[in-house]
Length: 540
Ligand code: NAD
Image 1 (tube, helix red, strand yellow):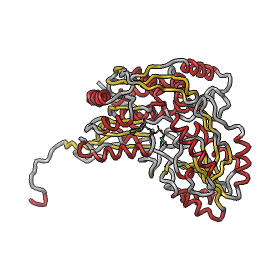
Image 2 (cartoon, protein in one colour):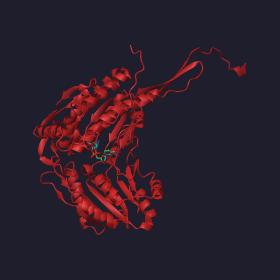
Image 3 (tube, protein in one colour):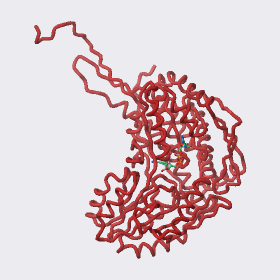
Image 4 (spheres, protein in one colour):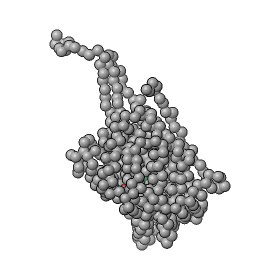
Protein backbone atom coordinates (compact mmCIF):
# COMPACT_ATOMS: atom_id res chain seq x y z
CA UNK A 1 0.00 0.00 0.00
CA UNK A 2 1.35 3.43 -0.92
CA UNK A 3 -0.90 5.98 0.68
CA UNK A 4 1.30 9.00 0.20
CA UNK A 5 2.69 11.29 -2.44
CA UNK A 6 6.43 11.02 -1.97
CA UNK A 7 8.82 13.77 -2.93
CA UNK A 8 12.52 14.06 -3.62
CA UNK A 9 14.11 17.38 -2.69
CA UNK A 10 16.22 19.07 -5.37
CA UNK A 11 19.68 17.56 -4.78
CA UNK A 12 22.79 19.50 -3.84
CA UNK A 13 25.82 18.85 -6.03
CA UNK A 14 28.19 16.39 -4.34
CA UNK A 15 30.86 18.45 -2.59
CA UNK A 16 34.32 17.86 -4.04
CA UNK A 17 37.38 17.65 -1.81
CA UNK A 18 40.49 19.58 -2.81
CA UNK A 19 43.00 17.01 -1.47
CA UNK A 20 45.41 19.66 -0.16
CA UNK A 21 48.75 18.22 0.93
CA UNK A 22 48.57 16.53 4.31
CA UNK A 23 44.78 16.07 4.50
CA UNK A 24 43.72 12.56 5.56
CA UNK A 25 41.54 12.01 2.47
CA UNK A 26 44.54 12.55 0.23
CA UNK A 27 46.54 9.91 2.10
CA UNK A 28 43.61 7.48 2.03
CA UNK A 29 43.13 7.89 -1.72
CA UNK A 30 46.83 7.58 -2.51
CA UNK A 31 47.18 4.42 -0.44
CA UNK A 32 44.20 2.92 -2.33
CA UNK A 33 45.92 3.86 -5.61
CA UNK A 34 49.09 2.08 -4.50
CA UNK A 35 47.07 -0.98 -3.49
CA UNK A 36 45.24 -1.18 -6.83
CA UNK A 37 48.48 -0.78 -8.80
CA UNK A 38 49.79 -3.94 -7.20
CA UNK A 39 46.73 -6.08 -7.91
CA UNK A 40 45.27 -7.69 -10.99
CA UNK A 41 41.47 -7.74 -10.86
CA UNK A 42 39.62 -10.41 -12.79
CA UNK A 43 36.64 -8.64 -14.39
CA UNK A 44 33.66 -10.75 -15.45
CA UNK A 45 30.53 -9.85 -17.37
CA UNK A 46 27.44 -9.47 -15.19
CA UNK A 47 24.37 -10.94 -16.88
CA UNK A 48 21.09 -11.35 -15.02
CA UNK A 49 23.00 -10.58 -11.83
CA UNK A 50 25.45 -13.48 -12.34
CA UNK A 51 29.16 -13.12 -13.00
CA UNK A 52 30.22 -14.70 -16.28
CA UNK A 53 33.86 -15.59 -17.01
CA UNK A 54 34.28 -16.42 -20.70
CA UNK A 55 38.01 -17.15 -20.73
CA UNK A 56 38.39 -14.86 -23.76
CA UNK A 57 40.42 -12.18 -22.04
CA UNK A 58 42.26 -8.95 -22.69
CA UNK A 59 44.71 -7.22 -20.39
CA UNK A 60 43.95 -3.79 -18.97
CA UNK A 61 47.10 -1.77 -18.22
CA UNK A 62 47.94 1.58 -16.67
CA UNK A 63 48.28 4.16 -19.48
CA UNK A 64 51.07 5.98 -17.59
CA UNK A 65 52.91 2.70 -16.88
CA UNK A 66 51.84 0.41 -19.67
CA UNK A 67 54.01 -2.44 -18.43
CA UNK A 68 51.74 -2.81 -15.40
CA UNK A 69 48.62 -4.92 -15.76
CA UNK A 70 45.76 -3.98 -13.43
CA UNK A 71 42.96 -6.17 -14.72
CA UNK A 72 42.13 -9.16 -16.84
CA UNK A 73 38.91 -8.51 -18.65
CA UNK A 74 36.60 -11.29 -19.83
CA UNK A 75 34.94 -10.43 -23.13
CA UNK A 76 31.47 -11.44 -24.18
CA UNK A 77 30.75 -12.74 -27.67
CA UNK A 78 27.54 -13.50 -29.53
CA UNK A 79 26.16 -15.99 -26.97
CA UNK A 80 26.72 -13.72 -23.97
CA UNK A 81 25.44 -10.60 -25.72
CA UNK A 82 22.24 -12.33 -26.80
CA UNK A 83 21.85 -13.73 -23.29
CA UNK A 84 22.26 -10.23 -21.83
CA UNK A 85 19.44 -8.89 -24.02
CA UNK A 86 17.23 -11.80 -22.94
CA UNK A 87 18.08 -11.21 -19.27
CA UNK A 88 17.23 -7.52 -19.61
CA UNK A 89 13.90 -8.22 -21.28
CA UNK A 90 13.04 -10.88 -18.69
CA UNK A 91 13.57 -8.31 -15.91
CA UNK A 92 11.56 -5.58 -17.64
CA UNK A 93 8.01 -6.15 -16.36
CA UNK A 94 8.85 -6.45 -12.67
CA UNK A 95 11.16 -3.46 -12.82
CA UNK A 96 8.61 -1.27 -14.59
CA UNK A 97 5.93 -2.35 -12.11
CA UNK A 98 8.01 -1.27 -9.11
CA UNK A 99 6.77 2.06 -7.68
CA UNK A 100 9.00 4.75 -9.08
CA UNK A 101 10.09 5.91 -5.63
CA UNK A 102 11.53 2.46 -5.04
CA UNK A 103 13.43 2.53 -8.32
CA UNK A 104 14.74 5.98 -7.44
CA UNK A 105 15.78 4.77 -3.98
CA UNK A 106 18.13 2.21 -5.57
CA UNK A 107 20.02 4.94 -7.42
CA UNK A 108 19.95 7.37 -4.49
CA UNK A 109 21.50 4.62 -2.39
CA UNK A 110 24.09 3.91 -5.09
CA UNK A 111 25.01 7.62 -5.04
CA UNK A 112 25.49 7.55 -1.28
CA UNK A 113 27.56 4.36 -1.43
CA UNK A 114 29.70 5.96 -4.12
CA UNK A 115 30.05 9.25 -2.25
CA UNK A 116 30.84 7.39 0.99
CA UNK A 117 32.41 3.97 1.48
CA UNK A 118 33.39 3.35 -2.16
CA UNK A 119 34.52 6.85 -3.11
CA UNK A 120 38.26 6.15 -2.96
CA UNK A 121 37.93 2.72 -4.56
CA UNK A 122 36.25 4.15 -7.67
CA UNK A 123 38.48 7.23 -7.71
CA UNK A 124 41.64 5.12 -7.45
CA UNK A 125 40.41 2.86 -10.28
CA UNK A 126 39.72 5.98 -12.38
CA UNK A 127 43.26 7.23 -11.69
CA UNK A 128 45.00 3.93 -12.30
CA UNK A 129 42.92 2.77 -15.27
CA UNK A 130 42.07 6.04 -17.04
CA UNK A 131 45.18 8.03 -16.02
CA UNK A 132 43.53 10.82 -14.08
CA UNK A 133 45.11 12.79 -11.25
CA UNK A 134 43.33 12.84 -7.93
CA UNK A 135 41.42 16.05 -8.64
CA UNK A 136 40.12 14.84 -12.01
CA UNK A 137 39.11 11.51 -10.45
CA UNK A 138 37.33 13.30 -7.61
CA UNK A 139 35.24 15.52 -9.90
CA UNK A 140 34.45 12.52 -12.08
CA UNK A 141 33.04 10.55 -9.14
CA UNK A 142 31.17 13.61 -7.82
CA UNK A 143 29.59 13.98 -11.25
CA UNK A 144 28.38 10.39 -11.19
CA UNK A 145 26.76 11.00 -7.78
CA UNK A 146 25.10 14.09 -9.29
CA UNK A 147 23.83 12.18 -12.32
CA UNK A 148 22.24 9.52 -10.11
CA UNK A 149 20.51 12.02 -7.83
CA UNK A 150 19.48 14.60 -10.42
CA UNK A 151 18.13 11.99 -12.85
CA UNK A 152 15.69 10.79 -10.19
CA UNK A 153 14.76 14.36 -9.33
CA UNK A 154 14.18 15.38 -12.97
CA UNK A 155 12.12 12.26 -13.54
CA UNK A 156 9.89 13.35 -10.67
CA UNK A 157 9.46 16.72 -12.42
CA UNK A 158 8.43 14.91 -15.61
CA UNK A 159 5.95 12.65 -13.81
CA UNK A 160 4.46 15.74 -12.17
CA UNK A 161 3.72 17.30 -15.52
CA UNK A 162 0.02 16.45 -16.01
CA UNK A 163 -2.61 17.76 -18.42
CA UNK A 164 -5.47 20.16 -17.68
CA UNK A 165 -8.78 19.05 -16.27
CA UNK A 166 -11.87 18.69 -18.50
CA UNK A 167 -15.19 18.98 -16.58
CA UNK A 168 -16.68 15.52 -16.20
CA UNK A 169 -13.47 13.70 -17.07
CA UNK A 170 -10.09 12.88 -15.64
CA UNK A 171 -7.03 13.35 -17.86
CA UNK A 172 -3.74 11.73 -17.05
CA UNK A 173 -0.39 11.17 -18.68
CA UNK A 174 1.40 7.96 -17.84
CA UNK A 175 5.13 8.06 -18.48
CA UNK A 176 5.80 4.48 -19.49
CA UNK A 177 9.29 3.09 -19.94
CA UNK A 178 10.19 2.22 -23.54
CA UNK A 179 9.03 -1.14 -24.76
CA UNK A 180 12.13 -3.29 -25.05
CA UNK A 181 15.65 -2.57 -23.78
CA UNK A 182 18.15 0.28 -23.97
CA UNK A 183 21.68 -0.32 -25.25
CA UNK A 184 24.28 1.83 -23.46
CA UNK A 185 27.66 2.19 -25.18
CA UNK A 186 30.11 4.21 -23.13
CA UNK A 187 33.50 5.97 -23.57
CA UNK A 188 36.78 5.74 -21.73
CA UNK A 189 37.11 9.28 -20.53
CA UNK A 190 34.53 9.63 -17.75
CA UNK A 191 33.56 7.07 -15.15
CA UNK A 192 30.52 9.28 -14.62
CA UNK A 193 29.35 8.89 -18.21
CA UNK A 194 30.01 5.14 -18.06
CA UNK A 195 27.62 4.80 -15.14
CA UNK A 196 25.10 7.38 -16.27
CA UNK A 197 24.26 6.02 -19.69
CA UNK A 198 22.70 2.84 -18.31
CA UNK A 199 21.33 4.35 -15.09
CA UNK A 200 19.42 7.28 -16.64
CA UNK A 201 17.09 5.03 -18.66
CA UNK A 202 16.92 2.51 -15.80
CA UNK A 203 15.56 4.91 -13.18
CA UNK A 204 12.71 5.65 -15.61
CA UNK A 205 11.83 1.93 -15.55
CA UNK A 206 13.86 0.72 -18.53
CA UNK A 207 16.23 -2.22 -18.62
CA UNK A 208 19.67 -1.92 -20.17
CA UNK A 209 22.61 -3.73 -21.71
CA UNK A 210 25.79 -1.76 -20.97
CA UNK A 211 29.05 -2.12 -22.86
CA UNK A 212 31.84 -0.21 -21.13
CA UNK A 213 35.02 0.93 -22.84
CA UNK A 214 37.83 -1.58 -22.27
CA UNK A 215 40.17 1.06 -20.87
CA UNK A 216 37.58 2.22 -18.33
CA UNK A 217 36.39 -1.20 -17.25
CA UNK A 218 38.01 -1.28 -13.83
CA UNK A 219 36.18 1.79 -12.48
CA UNK A 220 33.02 0.85 -14.39
CA UNK A 221 33.02 -2.68 -12.94
CA UNK A 222 33.42 -1.36 -9.38
CA UNK A 223 30.42 0.88 -10.04
CA UNK A 224 28.40 -2.07 -11.37
CA UNK A 225 29.05 -3.84 -8.05
CA UNK A 226 27.85 -0.74 -6.17
CA UNK A 227 24.59 -0.85 -8.13
CA UNK A 228 24.12 -4.47 -7.10
CA UNK A 229 24.84 -3.64 -3.47
CA UNK A 230 22.34 -0.77 -3.69
CA UNK A 231 19.64 -3.32 -4.51
CA UNK A 232 19.37 -3.14 -8.29
CA UNK A 233 17.39 -6.25 -9.26
CA UNK A 234 19.14 -8.86 -11.38
CA UNK A 235 18.95 -8.23 -15.10
CA UNK A 236 17.93 -4.57 -14.95
CA UNK A 237 21.42 -3.51 -16.03
CA UNK A 238 23.65 -6.10 -17.65
CA UNK A 239 27.36 -5.35 -17.84
CA UNK A 240 28.90 -6.75 -21.02
CA UNK A 241 32.50 -5.87 -21.85
CA UNK A 242 32.89 -6.93 -25.48
CA UNK A 243 34.20 -5.81 -28.84
CA UNK A 244 32.33 -2.83 -30.26
CA UNK A 245 31.61 -4.56 -33.55
CA UNK A 246 30.04 -7.52 -31.72
CA UNK A 247 27.87 -5.18 -29.67
CA UNK A 248 26.67 -3.56 -32.89
CA UNK A 249 25.99 -6.89 -34.57
CA UNK A 250 24.25 -8.75 -31.76
CA UNK A 251 22.73 -6.07 -29.53
CA UNK A 252 21.98 -3.08 -31.75
CA UNK A 253 20.23 -5.20 -34.38
CA UNK A 254 17.99 -7.01 -31.88
CA UNK A 255 14.30 -6.30 -32.69
CA UNK A 256 13.68 -5.43 -29.03
CA UNK A 257 16.10 -2.46 -29.15
CA UNK A 258 14.05 0.49 -27.87
CA UNK A 259 16.78 3.02 -27.22
CA UNK A 260 20.48 3.64 -27.69
CA UNK A 261 22.36 5.83 -25.19
CA UNK A 262 25.82 6.72 -26.38
CA UNK A 263 28.78 8.92 -25.65
CA UNK A 264 31.91 8.61 -27.75
CA UNK A 265 33.19 9.50 -31.17
CA UNK A 266 31.05 10.83 -34.00
CA UNK A 267 32.24 7.97 -36.22
CA UNK A 268 30.94 5.24 -33.91
CA UNK A 269 27.62 7.04 -33.35
CA UNK A 270 27.21 7.40 -37.12
CA UNK A 271 27.99 3.73 -37.65
CA UNK A 272 25.35 2.68 -35.10
CA UNK A 273 22.81 5.10 -36.59
CA UNK A 274 23.45 3.51 -40.02
CA UNK A 275 23.10 0.03 -38.51
CA UNK A 276 19.75 0.98 -36.98
CA UNK A 277 18.60 2.66 -40.19
CA UNK A 278 19.44 -0.31 -42.34
CA UNK A 279 17.42 -2.64 -40.03
CA UNK A 280 14.56 -0.24 -39.40
CA UNK A 281 11.84 -2.67 -40.53
CA UNK A 282 12.95 -5.17 -37.94
CA UNK A 283 12.36 -3.21 -34.72
CA UNK A 284 9.18 -3.41 -32.63
CA UNK A 285 9.31 0.38 -32.23
CA UNK A 286 11.50 3.22 -33.52
CA UNK A 287 14.60 3.10 -31.31
CA UNK A 288 15.40 6.40 -29.61
CA UNK A 289 18.95 7.37 -30.55
CA UNK A 290 20.67 9.63 -28.05
CA UNK A 291 24.34 10.44 -28.55
CA UNK A 292 26.90 12.92 -27.29
CA UNK A 293 29.84 12.78 -29.65
CA UNK A 294 33.01 14.57 -30.75
CA UNK A 295 34.05 18.18 -30.58
CA UNK A 296 36.52 20.78 -31.76
CA UNK A 297 35.99 23.18 -28.93
CA UNK A 298 37.13 26.77 -29.23
CA UNK A 299 38.24 29.85 -27.38
CA UNK A 300 37.60 33.13 -29.18
CA UNK A 301 39.39 36.19 -27.83
CA UNK A 302 38.50 39.81 -28.47
CA UNK A 303 41.17 42.53 -28.24
CA UNK A 304 39.51 43.68 -24.98
CA UNK A 305 40.16 40.31 -23.27
CA UNK A 306 42.12 40.05 -20.03
CA UNK A 307 45.34 38.28 -21.03
CA UNK A 308 45.74 36.58 -17.65
CA UNK A 309 42.20 35.17 -17.68
CA UNK A 310 42.54 34.13 -21.30
CA UNK A 311 45.82 32.29 -20.84
CA UNK A 312 44.59 30.58 -17.67
CA UNK A 313 41.47 29.45 -19.58
CA UNK A 314 43.51 28.26 -22.56
CA UNK A 315 45.86 26.16 -20.44
CA UNK A 316 43.28 24.66 -18.14
CA UNK A 317 40.79 23.91 -20.89
CA UNK A 318 43.33 22.45 -23.29
CA UNK A 319 45.55 20.39 -21.00
CA UNK A 320 43.49 19.17 -18.03
CA UNK A 321 43.13 15.40 -18.32
CA UNK A 322 45.58 15.58 -21.24
CA UNK A 323 42.97 17.22 -23.47
CA UNK A 324 40.75 14.13 -23.32
CA UNK A 325 37.59 15.83 -22.12
CA UNK A 326 35.05 16.16 -24.87
CA UNK A 327 34.84 19.83 -23.85
CA UNK A 328 38.62 20.42 -24.01
CA UNK A 329 39.62 23.53 -25.97
CA UNK A 330 41.68 22.51 -28.98
CA UNK A 331 41.59 25.70 -31.09
CA UNK A 332 41.88 29.37 -30.19
CA UNK A 333 41.39 32.56 -32.20
CA UNK A 334 43.56 35.39 -30.89
CA UNK A 335 43.64 38.97 -32.26
CA UNK A 336 47.05 40.08 -33.53
CA UNK A 337 47.10 43.06 -31.14
CA UNK A 338 46.92 40.66 -28.17
CA UNK A 339 49.16 37.88 -29.46
CA UNK A 340 52.56 39.18 -28.23
CA UNK A 341 51.25 39.47 -24.64
CA UNK A 342 49.42 36.13 -24.87
CA UNK A 343 52.50 34.45 -26.33
CA UNK A 344 54.70 35.74 -23.52
CA UNK A 345 52.26 34.78 -20.76
CA UNK A 346 51.76 31.34 -22.29
CA UNK A 347 55.50 30.77 -22.41
CA UNK A 348 55.91 31.81 -18.80
CA UNK A 349 52.98 29.68 -17.57
CA UNK A 350 53.81 26.59 -19.62
CA UNK A 351 57.09 26.12 -17.70
CA UNK A 352 55.04 24.51 -14.93
CA UNK A 353 52.80 22.47 -17.20
CA UNK A 354 53.92 18.93 -17.98
CA UNK A 355 52.55 15.38 -18.24
CA UNK A 356 53.69 12.82 -15.65
CA UNK A 357 52.73 9.86 -13.50
CA UNK A 358 49.46 9.94 -11.53
CA UNK A 359 51.41 9.99 -8.25
CA UNK A 360 53.51 13.01 -9.29
CA UNK A 361 51.61 15.80 -7.49
CA UNK A 362 53.08 18.51 -9.73
CA UNK A 363 52.15 16.91 -13.05
CA UNK A 364 49.47 19.04 -14.73
CA UNK A 365 48.16 16.02 -16.60
CA UNK A 366 48.99 12.36 -17.10
CA UNK A 367 49.19 9.91 -19.98
CA UNK A 368 46.86 9.65 -22.96
CA UNK A 369 44.68 6.59 -22.87
CA UNK A 370 46.40 4.03 -25.08
CA UNK A 371 48.86 3.24 -27.84
CA UNK A 372 46.42 4.17 -30.63
CA UNK A 373 45.82 7.63 -29.12
CA UNK A 374 49.55 8.14 -28.56
CA UNK A 375 50.43 7.21 -32.15
CA UNK A 376 47.65 9.39 -33.58
CA UNK A 377 48.71 12.47 -31.61
CA UNK A 378 52.43 11.93 -32.21
CA UNK A 379 51.80 11.75 -35.97
CA UNK A 380 49.93 15.09 -35.80
CA UNK A 381 52.81 16.69 -33.91
CA UNK A 382 55.33 15.35 -36.45
CA UNK A 383 53.19 16.80 -39.26
CA UNK A 384 53.05 20.16 -37.51
CA UNK A 385 56.81 20.20 -36.96
CA UNK A 386 57.38 19.56 -40.68
CA UNK A 387 54.61 21.78 -42.09
CA UNK A 388 55.14 25.34 -43.38
CA UNK A 389 51.49 25.95 -42.35
CA UNK A 390 52.21 25.44 -38.65
CA UNK A 391 54.74 26.14 -35.93
CA UNK A 392 55.06 24.39 -32.58
CA UNK A 393 55.36 27.23 -30.11
CA UNK A 394 55.29 25.23 -26.85
CA UNK A 395 55.90 21.57 -26.00
CA UNK A 396 55.81 19.02 -28.78
CA UNK A 397 57.64 16.24 -26.90
CA UNK A 398 56.42 12.65 -26.71
CA UNK A 399 57.70 9.65 -24.75
CA UNK A 400 56.16 6.19 -24.67
CA UNK A 401 58.99 4.35 -22.96
CA UNK A 402 57.08 3.98 -19.65
CA UNK A 403 53.66 5.49 -20.33
CA UNK A 404 51.86 7.20 -23.20
CA UNK A 405 53.07 10.71 -22.45
CA UNK A 406 52.47 13.66 -24.76
CA UNK A 407 53.78 16.96 -23.45
CA UNK A 408 51.18 19.75 -23.50
CA UNK A 409 51.68 21.49 -26.82
CA UNK A 410 50.68 24.76 -28.43
CA UNK A 411 50.76 24.96 -32.22
CA UNK A 412 50.38 28.20 -34.15
CA UNK A 413 48.59 27.59 -37.45
CA UNK A 414 49.15 30.00 -40.33
CA UNK A 415 46.21 28.49 -42.19
CA UNK A 416 42.93 28.68 -40.20
CA UNK A 417 41.89 25.39 -41.81
CA UNK A 418 45.11 23.62 -40.92
CA UNK A 419 44.38 20.00 -39.88
CA UNK A 420 44.75 20.58 -36.12
CA UNK A 421 42.41 23.60 -36.30
CA UNK A 422 39.56 21.55 -37.69
CA UNK A 423 39.92 17.84 -36.77
CA UNK A 424 39.38 16.36 -33.32
CA UNK A 425 42.68 14.98 -31.99
CA UNK A 426 41.73 14.30 -28.36
CA UNK A 427 45.08 15.03 -26.77
CA UNK A 428 46.90 17.85 -24.95
CA UNK A 429 47.32 20.00 -28.03
CA UNK A 430 45.95 23.52 -28.54
CA UNK A 431 46.20 25.17 -31.96
CA UNK A 432 46.11 28.96 -32.17
CA UNK A 433 45.17 31.08 -35.16
CA UNK A 434 46.15 34.74 -34.92
CA UNK A 435 43.68 36.95 -36.78
CA UNK A 436 44.04 40.59 -37.83
CA UNK A 437 41.93 42.73 -35.50
CA UNK A 438 40.13 44.40 -38.39
CA UNK A 439 39.17 40.96 -39.75
CA UNK A 440 37.26 39.80 -36.70
CA UNK A 441 34.08 39.13 -38.68
CA UNK A 442 35.97 36.74 -40.93
CA UNK A 443 37.59 35.07 -37.90
CA UNK A 444 34.12 34.56 -36.40
CA UNK A 445 32.91 33.04 -39.64
CA UNK A 446 35.87 30.66 -39.64
CA UNK A 447 35.27 29.70 -36.04
CA UNK A 448 31.62 28.99 -36.81
CA UNK A 449 32.03 27.10 -40.07
CA UNK A 450 35.43 25.46 -40.35
CA UNK A 451 34.58 22.36 -38.30
CA UNK A 452 31.57 20.06 -38.38
CA UNK A 453 31.16 20.12 -34.58
CA UNK A 454 29.16 22.26 -32.14
CA UNK A 455 29.99 21.17 -28.61
CA UNK A 456 31.66 23.83 -26.38
CA UNK A 457 33.21 27.24 -26.84
CA UNK A 458 34.25 30.34 -24.92
CA UNK A 459 34.56 34.05 -25.57
CA UNK A 460 37.03 36.20 -23.69
CA UNK A 461 36.24 39.93 -23.86
CA UNK A 462 35.77 42.77 -21.39
CA UNK A 463 33.94 45.03 -23.82
CA UNK A 464 30.23 44.23 -23.40
CA UNK A 465 29.40 45.00 -27.03
CA UNK A 466 32.08 42.52 -28.12
CA UNK A 467 30.67 39.85 -25.78
CA UNK A 468 27.25 40.32 -27.36
CA UNK A 469 28.53 40.39 -30.94
CA UNK A 470 30.65 37.24 -30.53
CA UNK A 471 27.96 35.35 -28.61
CA UNK A 472 25.47 36.06 -31.40
CA UNK A 473 27.84 35.19 -34.22
CA UNK A 474 28.62 31.84 -32.59
CA UNK A 475 25.12 30.98 -31.40
CA UNK A 476 25.03 27.63 -33.27
CA UNK A 477 28.73 26.83 -32.79
CA UNK A 478 28.43 25.43 -29.26
CA UNK A 479 25.79 23.77 -27.07
CA UNK A 480 27.74 24.90 -24.00
CA UNK A 481 28.99 28.47 -24.31
CA UNK A 482 31.09 30.33 -21.75
CA UNK A 483 31.83 34.01 -21.27
CA UNK A 484 35.19 34.82 -19.68
CA UNK A 485 35.40 31.23 -18.45
CA UNK A 486 37.10 28.13 -19.86
CA UNK A 487 34.81 25.87 -21.91
CA UNK A 488 35.25 22.79 -19.67
CA UNK A 489 33.83 21.88 -16.26
CA UNK A 490 30.06 21.73 -16.80
CA UNK A 491 28.23 20.78 -13.62
CA UNK A 492 25.06 18.65 -13.51
CA UNK A 493 22.03 20.79 -12.69
CA UNK A 494 23.98 24.00 -13.41
CA UNK A 495 25.18 23.86 -17.04
CA UNK A 496 23.34 20.95 -18.74
CA UNK A 497 25.86 19.46 -21.14
CA UNK A 498 25.73 18.58 -24.83
CA UNK A 499 26.16 19.93 -28.33
CA UNK A 500 24.59 19.71 -31.75
CA UNK A 501 25.83 19.51 -35.36
CA UNK A 502 28.25 16.52 -35.45
CA UNK A 503 28.62 16.71 -31.64
CA UNK A 504 25.42 14.85 -30.93
CA UNK A 505 21.69 15.01 -30.40
CA UNK A 506 22.08 17.67 -27.67
CA UNK A 507 19.82 15.89 -25.21
CA UNK A 508 21.84 17.32 -22.31
CA UNK A 509 23.10 14.59 -19.99
CA UNK A 510 21.76 14.84 -16.44
CA UNK A 511 18.77 16.99 -17.40
CA UNK A 512 15.01 16.63 -17.76
CA UNK A 513 15.46 16.76 -21.55
CA UNK A 514 17.56 13.62 -21.45
CA UNK A 515 15.14 11.86 -19.11
CA UNK A 516 12.27 12.63 -21.51
CA UNK A 517 13.98 10.42 -24.09
CA UNK A 518 13.55 7.38 -21.82
CA UNK A 519 9.81 7.62 -21.31
CA UNK A 520 6.96 7.01 -23.70
CA UNK A 521 3.76 8.85 -22.85
CA UNK A 522 0.30 7.35 -22.70
CA UNK A 523 -2.51 9.89 -22.53
CA UNK A 524 -5.49 8.59 -20.61
CA UNK A 525 -8.96 10.18 -20.54
CA UNK A 526 -11.55 8.75 -18.18
CA UNK A 527 -15.13 9.97 -18.51
CA UNK A 528 -17.03 9.96 -15.23
CA UNK A 529 -20.60 9.77 -16.56
CA UNK A 530 -20.47 8.48 -20.16
CA UNK A 531 -22.69 10.04 -22.82
CA UNK A 532 -25.43 7.69 -24.08
CA UNK A 533 -26.76 9.79 -26.99
CA UNK A 534 -26.01 8.75 -30.56
CA UNK A 535 -27.00 11.94 -32.43
CA UNK A 536 -25.10 15.15 -31.82
CA UNK A 537 -27.14 18.16 -30.58
CA UNK A 538 -27.10 19.94 -33.99
CA UNK A 539 -28.65 16.83 -35.62
CA UNK A 540 -31.65 16.76 -33.35
P1 NAD B 1 34.81 5.69 -29.10
O1 NAD B 1 33.74 6.16 -30.01
O2 NAD B 1 36.06 5.18 -29.70
O3 NAD B 1 34.27 4.54 -28.14
C1 NAD B 1 33.03 4.66 -27.45
C2 NAD B 1 32.49 3.26 -27.22
O4 NAD B 1 32.18 2.67 -28.49
C3 NAD B 1 33.49 2.32 -26.54
O5 NAD B 1 32.80 1.49 -25.65
C4 NAD B 1 34.05 1.54 -27.71
O6 NAD B 1 34.53 0.26 -27.34
C5 NAD B 1 32.85 1.41 -28.62
N1 NAD B 1 33.18 1.19 -30.03
C6 NAD B 1 34.33 1.49 -30.68
N2 NAD B 1 34.23 1.14 -31.98
C7 NAD B 1 33.00 0.63 -32.15
C8 NAD B 1 32.29 0.11 -33.27
N3 NAD B 1 32.85 0.06 -34.45
N4 NAD B 1 31.03 -0.33 -33.07
C9 NAD B 1 30.44 -0.24 -31.86
N5 NAD B 1 31.07 0.22 -30.77
C10 NAD B 1 32.33 0.66 -30.91
O7 NAD B 1 35.12 6.93 -28.10
P2 NAD B 1 36.19 7.01 -26.93
O8 NAD B 1 37.55 6.97 -27.52
O9 NAD B 1 35.86 6.05 -25.84
O10 NAD B 1 35.89 8.45 -26.36
C11 NAD B 1 36.38 9.59 -26.98
C12 NAD B 1 35.34 10.24 -27.86
O11 NAD B 1 34.18 10.48 -27.10
C13 NAD B 1 35.77 11.59 -28.38
O12 NAD B 1 35.35 11.72 -29.72
C14 NAD B 1 35.01 12.57 -27.48
O13 NAD B 1 34.78 13.84 -28.06
C15 NAD B 1 33.75 11.82 -27.25
N6 NAD B 1 33.08 12.25 -26.03
C16 NAD B 1 32.01 13.08 -26.14
C17 NAD B 1 31.35 13.54 -25.01
C18 NAD B 1 30.17 14.47 -25.13
O14 NAD B 1 29.48 14.67 -24.14
N7 NAD B 1 29.91 15.02 -26.31
C19 NAD B 1 31.78 13.12 -23.74
C20 NAD B 1 32.86 12.26 -23.65
C21 NAD B 1 33.50 11.82 -24.81
